Image (cartoon, rainbow, N blue to C red):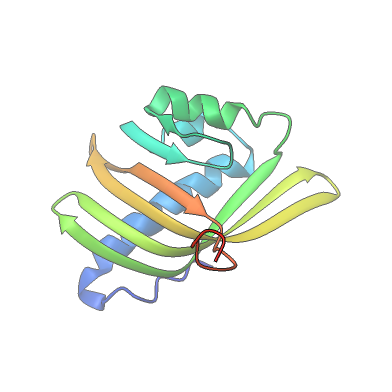
Length: 146
């Protein structure tokens, strides 16, 4: 279940934009379709995913997802405690947590809760992910050797 509990009722369209994008992501990830996953991202999208570096542009993002072909059988994102704000017409910022789950083999499943930041934009009449950054919550503040 997607939890978007930080969104005021008057901002239902922002909540719906995030819910629609995550539903599309889950539909494509259920069968691990790299091309369909890539189409959820804006042409100029940026993805900080689970591999070193980042992917810039829809083609690179699609290649990123394709790099998991044969490794990930299916996946899902479930949003938790999202704070969703409209930055301007056609731009939405959502920050909070997501639960990521993956099936790697019929008997091998993973699950992680990550911090999340998604920036959504309207492109071609649809909401797309412009910026995607998920990261683990640090065990301690990153203050070096202190």
